[in-house]
Length: 370
Image (cartoon, rainbow, N blue to C red; front, side, top):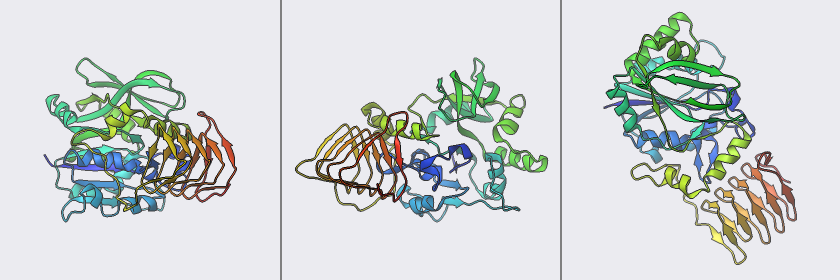
């Protein structure tokens, strides 16, 4: 069954927080050596989706540097493979919704030979097996399958939240978006399965009618006209929408159960850009506990409950606790840092003390020296 994959690299301005101010949400570093797009790309590739379009909006230079030709995901192909779809159209304005983005790439959709299409966003950390999703799609006779999860929506989670009401056959009979919602609900994870011909028809109709919202004017308005069913995703789902959630998701990866679910599933690896870095070097005074350490680091201090990206240097007598240090960070000797997030190439001078909190971690921007 030939399937086209469409990944929206960043749609919402609400996803713009400190780490994403100068990069698209899709290229946000996470887990020591990964970018957010690695999870969406890998889930598709692991399910034999080999023609994938990445729909970009702005700040996507780092995304292009990361994915390149798609070779690391086996997507460097003469037919299909990976295609970067930059914004283009009749105006110079950026689009502000998925539907407006789809309008700009409708020719790409029409020219693709695949029968089905999977659409997904890029703000989440999860490992999706699409085989049961398609099985549910076929068995239920659905026109569109929307993925959702049952969970308690917290105050600091991404808004608006899209809440589904389902009947006993998992058909979606109600759908509402809330700018303010807290509590238990069946919420969309912004991933859809349908026939490509149906998507094309809906997008062309939206162009003719001047529609702008995929959820409100495509999905919700067709609940009575199309058979739209829900698929309940029960695996780990880390959603990034703020510095607090960015910190929490990275700390979640220190949990062995969550880490195994994401990275140790047979036939469902998470791939990323390969770098020929040297192994991490642990000096005489190194002590590491409950942490994720990427390759190419040099450690001569104490690291506890932290995530260290490639090329991080921890000098002698340094104590690092509950922190996220991105690529190329240098922590000078005799320093103490806790609940700190550093962007790339940050230098922390010797004998520096930085203490944030789980609710408000300290953030140091790219290239900063403190």
